[in-house]
Length: 309
Image (cartoon, rainbow, N blue to C red; front, top):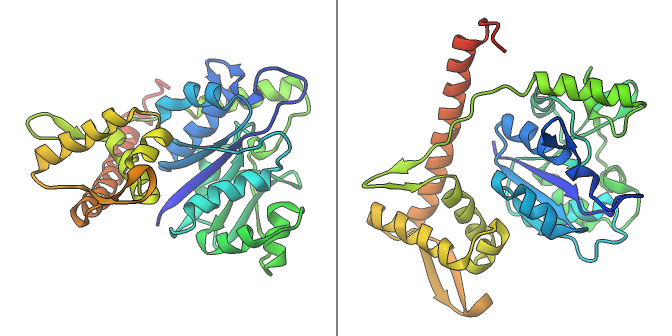
């Protein structure tokens, strides 16, 4: 099952010139902790909605390999506006999508796993009687959210469609927005840091030389969604020439075309994944998932009882 995530980082921070989600806490910014949590749970398809100081935010986070969409204008959007932008991009897919603001950094990976494995089409984690994040919806609910014109947020959109949330009780205080005190904030940061240690595997294919890895995968996903190499390169933060170099290097090693072009469309020509390109992307994603599962299994076997971490 495909899992995606939409992170809302579009709004203007109150009383500060620096976006709150770029504040650093013990070596990691707030939003980096959000991304790490999601990626640690195996979620690769992450979309961040930017607005205020978008270039600064995108530059700081480019290395994580996520997709950025800009909310314009960004001055007065509520979170539902940002959610809609992300969901509009995802609407043709199937699976589940997690939704979270960029300034809720301390939820745990175990909580993400619990949310994803809870039956229901709309899941909200609840701690101490308060609703938290990330929330999870099925892709089948995306049309109802996009059609909603009210101002009662995501819950209002789904209530209008007759969908009630499943509230999942959790012991994870990191799902809650805001903190009661500086001591609580530090406590949550320490708890989060204690759970950060994990294996990290970078999967690539190589022939005469390495030719297909995370960068190429991200680019192909965007080409498949956008129908444009130029736009896909812009969304993933690489130059147009570098994008085509990645594609041509892969095609040279593979011996077949993975990206086709046809006249017309945006920028004078449309692009698409060939049948072999789509199959390559699907098989690589399956391979990558299995390698990462094996890495976690081996990591736990070797390190879990070592008392080193």
